[in-house]
Structure formats: C-alpha cells, structure tokens
Length: 176
Image (cartoon, rainbow, N blue to C red; front, side, top):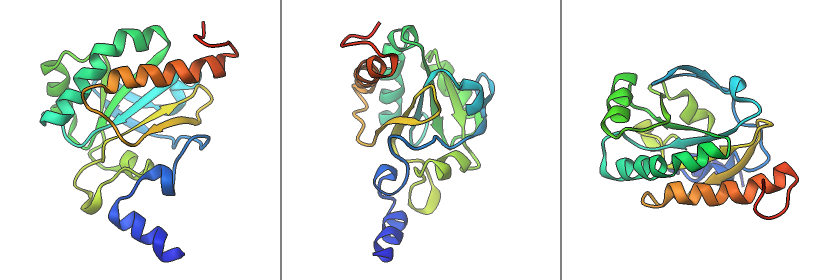
C-alpha cells in the first residue's frame, strides 16, 4: 500500500485524502502578505480562511477572489479572517489586491513553504492547487474545500461557517 501513497503525492491528489483534514492541527507559518508579516499563531482565537489559488490575474482565480470579496463583509461580521495564498511574488499580490479592491490580505508563498506544508503544491511545483482551509479558533482544521466553485466560493464559505460556528459556539441552528 505504500506505493499508493507515493503515487498520490506524485500525482498531486488531495491533501485531505492523504494528509491534512478536519481535526488536524493547521501547519504553522510565517509569511509575507499585502498587509505585512502574518503568523498563524497570532490568529489564535479567530476563525481563519486560507484560500490557496493557482495564479493571480488568471480568469478563474480572479473570479474566485472576487466571489470571496463580495461575501467578505458577511464573513468578517462572523469573526472570520480571510487570506488568499498563491505562489506569486508580493508585488504581484499587491497589484492583484488593488486591481480587484480586495478587502482581505493576500499572502505571497513564493518559496512554496505554505503550499508544501498544506499539501497543495501541484505536480512539478509550478503552482498551488485550488483548495481552501477553514481553521477554527483552536488552530485545528475545521473544513477543507477541495472542490471549489470559483463563481460561488464566497457564498459557499459563508455556508460552511454557518454550519461550523454554531457547533463551536455551543449554540443551536443559526448560531449567535
């Protein structure tokens, strides 16, 4: 069975299937973002969305980040901190953020450390695969979105948060 796990890594199959999934500790990171340095440890106590996408300024990625932009106020009102992550350099991330008026920060993972840690580095390491991690306030992964609809990703994330937060907050349906 060992060969299957190796084949999955080589072929770039899903991290949740062969690596990180709900309940796992989110890998720690220190990264450069459009808003300055960011450390996962500094976000303890908050709901965090790490949205990995392949490349800034491409049609699908633009649709995805804008979908999340359009849902951002509702996410932020629920105490969610959002970061978009790609292998693009910081200057490209700053331009992408400005061009699409993104209210959340973008992380440059040009050295690929986050993509490797989260298991989203595509074959040959040319880009990160499209995958989103929702990290609970305790630092554990609460949800992994492996199949992302770029047009509805923001609303889909809202649905995930609505489902997760009432459980975590101890409330019933609808949460707070």
